[in-house]
Length: 270
Ligand code: ADP
Image (tube, rainbow, N blue to C red; front, side, top):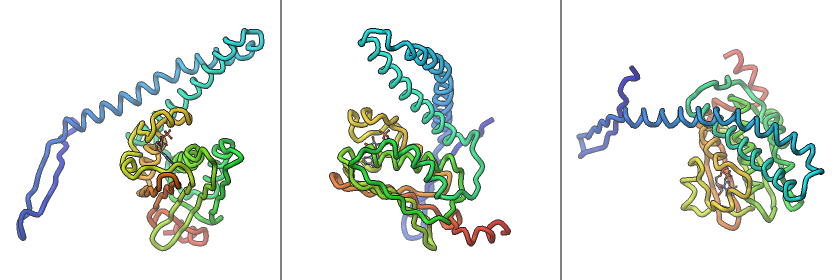
């Protein structure tokens, strides 16, 4: 009932002839669908027991002062780990929604400034005294999209810039618009990334340095989320980096998705 899925490829055989390859990928498609369903269901089922564990931990924390130090440390540790698990489940569910197109938010004109105000609330508390962050955003720029998805993508990039600049440094968040595109970029002076790792960065759970990644409290899903949000906005991710000097992550949105305020009225009546 789901039909057949075919993959078609053409290549030039000689000057006039083309070769057409047709591959039946139905089984591959079904397996992929099963994987997506499994991840979505498992993440959803994990939410309830975690809520119960967190509830008991909160109660235990209230009586923490009466417990021996080793148990107090245990409670703090359990609370940190349950928070981490909560973030992981939230990210898995978001990724599942993005992949399956389920319960998606409607697109509308969203002010970039407003998205970045929310990003600041998440990111600024993570900074140390050695970090300096600047937001260079015109007040009147808009993207046509889903605001909470765009928030997830932009905040993942800004939070990564902070996490992977352990020595501090400048972080520049910018929006630049021209006649061809609107570009949201985050530049840092952090660890940078070896060029051979760049093509794999948006894979789920891929980390350049496994040990370092898990210590930073990330879920390993941030850039996979960024990639899927951008696909849904017909946008592209560009990564430029120099190990030891820093990285720039840029999201390129097509012209029909971006507007200056003065032109919004025209769009509304189109
Ligand atoms: P994580 O939760 O591990 O941060 P992400 O998907 O957000 O997961 O990022 C994947 C990996 O890409 C990270 O583990 C890190 O190795 C690398 N990375 C991401 N952003 C940066 C950055 N700004 N500078 C250096 N490395 C980065």
